[in-house]
Every structure is written in structure tokens, then in C-alpha cells.
Image 1 (cartoon, rainbow, N blue to C red):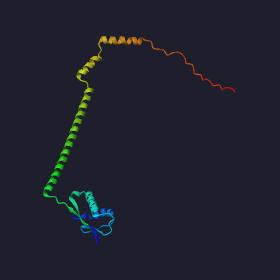
Image 2: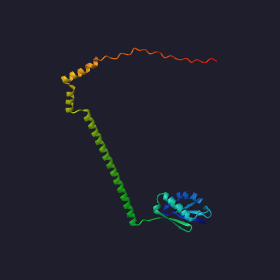
Image 3: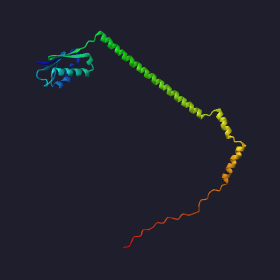
Image 4: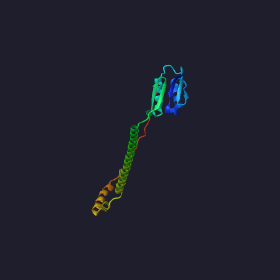
Length: 195
């Protein structure tokens, strides 16, 4: 005699997986027959009721990612897993929602790509400006070259001044090394007291 029957409906292809999932929770082996699972009388672990089995089945459906598409009904010792059929309006709403999400993702992706391109362009421009600045600092302008040449050619008066300034320095006697000799350091010997 069958104590509990689970009608799988359109989930019959996952019957073996569901049986494997329920076995440790019910404490017994389930028998797969066509589109249903069956459990024998007295073999279910104490304290497990059909309401608990419904919760286990819902958890299994959730793990498979199809919880929104199925409902589980309990009537006495029989549980039925039924696929929810969406109405025309619900299908259209779902499709619109999916299209809207896809469009938003596409726009976000395009905005991100634009931002990356803009940043790369700005970085490139900054790098070029920096290189131009460095080049302009390295190569002096014609005016700077002319000024530098004028500064390099000291006038006769500047030459005389610079020679006069150098002359006294050359006349100064250089310091001679000191002739004092250092005394070598002497070591003091310790004398031990005689007892």
C-alpha cells in the first residue's frame, strides 16, 4: 500500500534527481514509476508529514532555477507538481521586461565603452602635451639662443673685472701643513696590588 505519492507532471525528466534529493530527508528509498514517485507505508521517518515533503520539493525546484514556473499542491497523501501556464498578458509583460533589461544592459555597455574611449583620448592628449612641453624646454627658441650668445661674449670691461677678481685669489698664500708632531699614545699599565 502506498503512503505518499508525488505526481511530477512536466518535471518527470527530473524524477530520479528529485528521488535522490528526497531520500535522505524522508529516510527511505522512493520508487520511480512513470510520472510519479511513491513511498511505502511505514517507511517514512517519524514526524515527516506531506506538508514537510512539499517544502522539500519546493526547495528542489528552487535549486533547479524553475521555482517561478511550478507550484506544489497537497491533497491528503498525494502531492502534485504543476507547471504554471502564463497568460497572454503575463507572457507579454515578461517579454517586455526581458527586452527592457537587455536594452539597459546594452546602453550601459555602450556608455562604458564611450567613457573608456574618452579617457584613453584624454590620456593620449595629456601625454602629447607633456611631450611637447618637454621638447620646448629642451630646444631653446631663437631669442633664447641669441641671449645666451650675448652672455657668453663678455665685453672688454667684463673681462677686466673678471681678471681683477681672479688675481687677488691667486696671490693669496696657501696654507702650509702644520709641523707639529703628534705624540704617540701611551698605555698605562695596571699594577696589581701585592698582598
